[in-house]
Structures are given as structure tokens and as C-alpha cells.
View (spheres, one colour):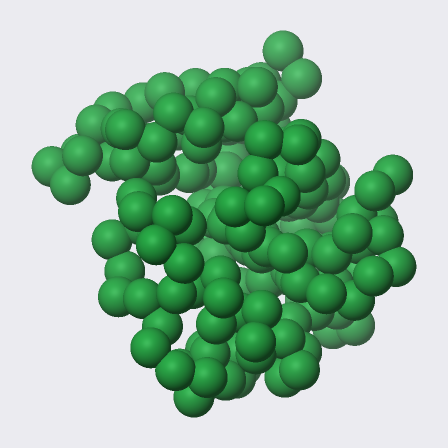
Length: 177
């Protein structure tokens, strides 16, 4: 393990995107994301009901980042500061060699390769910068878009759990296979 420190926060840039730290002024976009019926369809979480919920979520996320318990990026288009989605690594194993990836994107931006672009960089960050040996993802068996994304990223389907979730896993030695 190379070391799990998220200070300073690692900003990641791609051809079209900037992945940056979540900010308090992202509250409206976080509320839109976390209260959206389409985004929440397969997540099994209670939708945000107020701006206060969104603000509390941002505070909790940034506290987790400060404790190095999780790394959570706001996805923005280029230099535009407006959040269109999020992506994170969390649930690190005790020995910091494995983590889970999670992501969500506002519906207007889905189907445009944005999450593939972001996830490719976050997976690279996990393996190259954090020294992870594996990354897992869980997706609802009906969420075909997420399943296709994980398969494009070379994640391997593992099992289906009781909650109708499919476990996918990518190991460092198989990521470019």
C-alpha cells in the first residue's frame, strides 16, 4: 500500500472532466442528484428531502475525506464548476489493499461516456496512487447501464447477493486484460 492520504485532495482531470472535492456550495446539485427518482431507482437509499439533507451529506463526506476513510469526487465538465455527478472510493479493507467504487450521474448527462471517463481515472488512481490490489462494485441486477460500465472497465462478475445486487471485482493484475 502506497499510503492512503487525501490531503491535499487529489484533483483529477480528463479530456472533458474535472474531478474535484465536494464543496458546501454544491448543495443544490447534491440535492438534485440525491433526490432524483431515476438516480435513486437502484440504490436502495432514502432520497434527500431538503437542502439541509444535502448540506449534512456534504459535511459527512468531507469529514470522511479528512479522516482518510473515503475519497469522494464531484464530477464537473471541464472548468465548469457545476457538479453533474459523483464518484468515490470507500469501504477500504483493514489493510488498505481493497476498496469499493460508487458513482452516480444526473440523468441529462448519462449515456455520453462521462462515467466511463471518470471511472477509468478513479480506478487508475486506486491502483497506481493508493496501491490497491482490488476494487469492488455492487450494482442492482436490473441496472444494465451500470453492469455494462463495469464490464467495459474489465470488472468481473462475482455473485448475486440476497438484495439483488451483483458483486463485480477488478484486480490490479486483470485491469488491462
